[in-house]
Length: 332
Image (cartoon, rainbow, N blue to C red; front, side):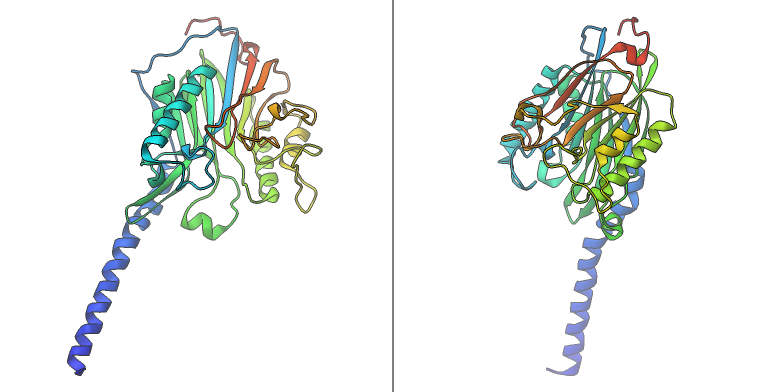
């Protein structure tokens, strides 16, 4: 091959490589640069009517919806597009039937390719009757036309007045830089004009060390505030003596740390003997991964795990006395 021809070929290959890198890296780079500004947001929809319950109690629920994939083990699975849409509609029906005032959701897609780019938080809030919701992104990046944007959400019948990110420690600094990490969302909700703080959390699934450090952050956040605070979500941890309980290298355990703070109470208090009290996996539950932790002085009227296989987790519901937030006799 003549030198000039070979030189032209190399230039074309180099140009093609540069164009390919630009096509791949520019959308990805922009998504990562923009991610801090999209990390948490509060939304409302005036067209959604507020449901009415007995105002003598406040009902909190938490549910890891597993990206709407059902019991599938991969987010790229979960059935056809129509099956995914049907499942998400069934999750909305489930939330409507739970009739909770506030719902903490984990593994919620806001714009992910595997879930048809559906904003699941917006959809569930609208379909289940919640006029207010907060979105908090854990992972947020794009490669070519494929998007990964998901995290936690809080749906509420009451106005969300403030929302911020709880920046839990990451499993890897490189992973955090390139894609993101598990975080939490800290919301202040005005329950008939009285402040209530909800921490929607999803702890690391890979390390009890990180879960323990995340629990320590929760205790620091909560102890510094006089506003009643509820922690809800998938902690990926069970206390010592419970099925599947784990400890870090220093014998630390996330739920044990939250217990030791004396800031919260939990149900069940003793190791469960009935699978109906367990939350994961949903089809054959073996341990408790999902919790609602409430202030020590709060009166818990009811606490239950709902049987459902719309996700690999089961939803948890806690009914609390309205004394938690003071006088709420004003109508909704």
